[in-house]
Length: 426
Image 1 (cartoon, one colour):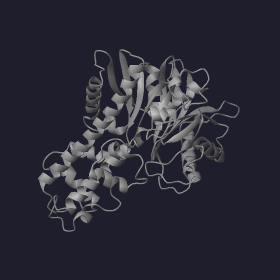
Image 2 (cartoon, rainbow, N blue to C red):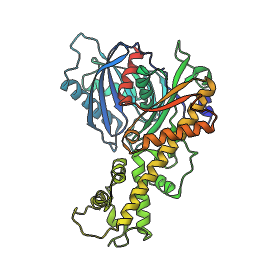
Image 3 (cartoon, rainbow, N blue to C red):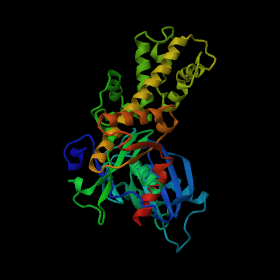
């Protein structure tokens, strides 16, 4: 962490956001755009009297991660915004003020101000050219201009999803110390004293602290197994985002697929399959965290697990191929092991950050705000992550009696949080 804050080589980028936590006094209506993966989310939020009094959310907005050109990708984004404003009659009339927009962009960005930043590199298998090394706010503004929204929307803040999660939660919970995403990808942020950021040569005026976007998905010191290493080689940029590839929803299912494929190829699982591993997995099929969750709740004779394997093979649901129930049960334990490791690793990372914050400024309570489908949908994930944080902090000398640390679900943090940051920026 200290290397990243000083600008020395580190797998943790430790990027200043130029934003600070909310005060709870922000007021008005604000638009938020949440670009965190293939599902674009658009949110309108009304803040009043320290509360989020109203919000409109649109979540069914698909983006194609294989779009080859960046301009075309941002045109997809702009088209979804047009539809959202039209559907909800939110477009300002001629002469009315433009809607302030906070832009959550959940990829590694070198942020240079509250409303500008260049993409360092794509993650989550996005490939669009013309984006890496360029200002993503400028790309969004160009796309908005092309659809006639440049006078209707004012992009006032660029926000990482973790920063948004922390901002949203801190609006109503001032003891919030961290924001964490455990979903398609993973990342974390926390509030740091500007005096502890040697590389920040142009600090935001009038602020003593800023939120640090850690980009912890790139952390490379967690122990990796043989199967992790195999997965890395089958993903884009194998040397990068190792922690994300070991813990996030985008990759845990792919890791499970790698394990199953190897076990079948070695004759350990389902030896009766007529065509080995090639039978089970069609090239276009893949596991994801959602299916791991369903496998976890399956019970003997494991019809859900069997059905999914058949689906992945492109076989009919009534295919009578023999799949040993004990082997199907093994997939339940495999799902549990992969998800449990993710929760444990995430908890250890949180504990390390909280311990640093406590040493800097001891306090009786801290809240860790967590958003993301893996955290709030995977059975038992939240409990195991909380247990790990508590246990690791005790080992670090921070007992629950000294500082109570609560890991809390921050619903819709990455969307509402961008609106909250936009409110702090106007």
